[in-house]
Length: 320
Image 1 (tube, rainbow, N blue to C red):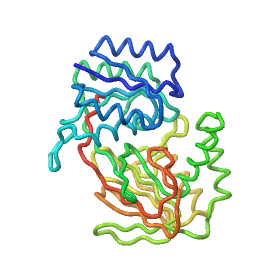
Image 2: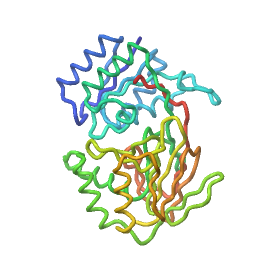
Image 3: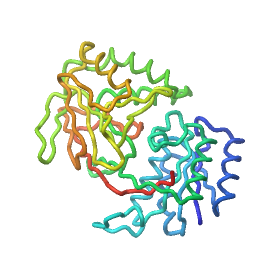
């Protein structure tokens, strides 16, 4: 079995020695070729060639950003999958995920350990047993562009926080859970809490207006604060369509009860007035009266006025 391993040398939680150990372990199990990513979008370029070069597996050692690039490379390549295929995931190389970032939401949502060495042990066991899971993805479309996401997207306040943290990372600071929390608290004081801009529409859906912030989920949890999962859409899963939580109020009387609920592990949806909630939807669109911050899998993608979200079932096979 041939595998291409994509390594982000700047991955947050691995060093050179750890990477060497993981590469040797994987190399003992498969015919392994190692490629280091050197620039933004490089993982997508490399992954897009995997099927044509005869690779059965594309493994990723990196964070959610590198995983997102890899997934987009795989799905944007033809890979033998045709429209209407009942399970197009079988026409693409399978994916192995080894967490190396700061949050590792996709890997943890799959049930993998957050430690890269422990996760490698788990995926080696999955390799031996050929244990695979078929997962769906989300897709965001805007202004003639399209990008897939593995666990979440969002418009509004959460994307504003990610934009601010990315700015701090540009100055050399690490994206730690504490930094996200502190940035979110500071940014809450500055965000517009008086002029909601977003309207949510979709086939067969009632229109929801005056939304400040919308979280779109392909699985649960949405993210983690350290070891604690954050679950605004607890019914979301890789086997269903997309879920959404929208906020029509951003004042403290509305936010504090919601924060308490989404930080508590629970099976029921958040409760409260002025919440917009969707579950297992194939498609919906967010339109904004003005440009609004937009993020996808924790990657800030600028300000947008209209984004359509679609569910892409049976998109990938993951060894897990």
